[in-house]
Amino acid sequence: MSSVRRHRTGAATSAPGSLGLPAAVSIGVGGMIGAGIFSILGVVAGVSGTALPVSFIIGGVVAVLAAYSYSKLGVRYPSVGGASQFLIEEYGDGLLSGALNIFQYFAYVIAIALYARGFAGYATTFFPNNTSTFLEEVFAVGIVVLFTLVNFLGSRIMGRAETAIVAIKVGVLVLFIAAGIFSVEPARLIPSGWGEPQYLLFGAGILFIGYEGFGLITNAAGEMTNPERELPRAIYLSVGIVIAIYVLVAVVVIGNLSITALEAAEDSALAEAAKPFLGQLGFTLIAIAALLSTSSAVNATLFGAANVSYQVAKEGELPESFTRKVWSRNSEGLFITAGLVIVFVILFNLGPIAMMGSAAFLVIYAAVSFGHLRVHRETGASPTIIWGSLITLLIMFVLIMIYILSNQPTAAVVLVITLVVSVLAEWAYRRWTGRRLQRLAETPRNDELPKNGQSSRSR
Image (cartoon, rainbow, N blue to C red; front, side, top):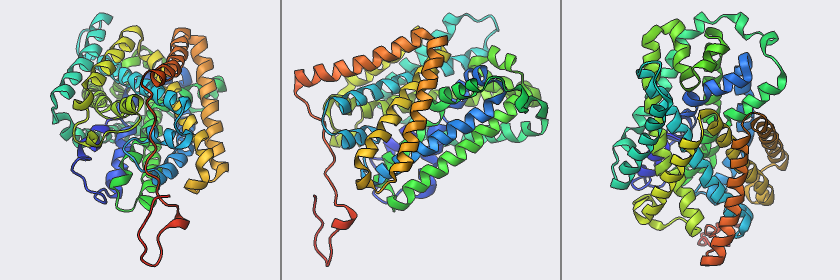
């Protein structure tokens, strides 16, 4: 999520056609290689075991299929709202689209809680080993409070630093791969040590939150030079780059450190994995990069993606002033979001939060894919590929829910309650305010484009 803020703040000054392919790819790569890889690696390793690289490949395949719908929908319905707008275009004004948008808002709340927990896990590595869990909660809550104040006061320091942070974290991961690949022990990676196949799939489901950030590229469609060509390329390039980095990181991690050691260092597993070949310096370098990445992800998601969902959930449309004054128009949303994040941070540890986050985003991506079947003629998409995406997303969701029910039943109950609350909240809010969800002004299909110099029209 860490590229959200850079894009959101830049939207006010970027003219249509000013965003090229490299910039769009950087938005996607930055959004995916955010806090996820630093935070969830130990959790997924504890589930997938030495099959961790394969879990990342499977998760990547699911992401590629889901990316197909986002690339088609992003070209047809360009909007800063991204998936929030897609749901409205697909399902129209109704309880379902409204409830899904509220649930997506909760998904971003859970994601921020994950990033805050990840920040706390790495922050405590700079303290003695017997540091209490209370201090970790203080760090997690503190980083949320800090960036709530930053956003409320209107500071753009972090927004201006986003490009540098993306470069730093990707550079650190490339260094990690380059330094560690030569010390990998092949025996650690052989299939005979993978364990039961279902755990490989469970791990793929849990790590989906590390891939979901590619959807941020669709928010930039209106600023691209040629979105019909560049948007799909940017999405697929960014997903491909991230899959390669994730898989190579997983190979280096498993090839250099035991699963027992990774599980023990759950919150700071990536830094721990750097010790065998980079020593304490490598541990510190990864920890600093993780602090930068997780803190910027808290800020970016709080500032951007969560607010998009909040605005759509509350008003049914994005205000015209959105790109200029994000929170100032509805500052209560900032404090509501921060309060909900703190609740999740206090109630759950890193593992359950990661599982809930991935499951929540799988629901949203599956809903977008199913809705795409309703409008596929508008987007020119292949129903076969959409069905492939929908089926794989639903399989991943079922698998992760089975795992959560078996290992973190409280998290499963909270996730279901969150979905039910989303439906009830939408129903009650509609009856109370009479609000309606607004579609974009419809644009002409390819066969309705103006000919012989005629002016364009809306259908």
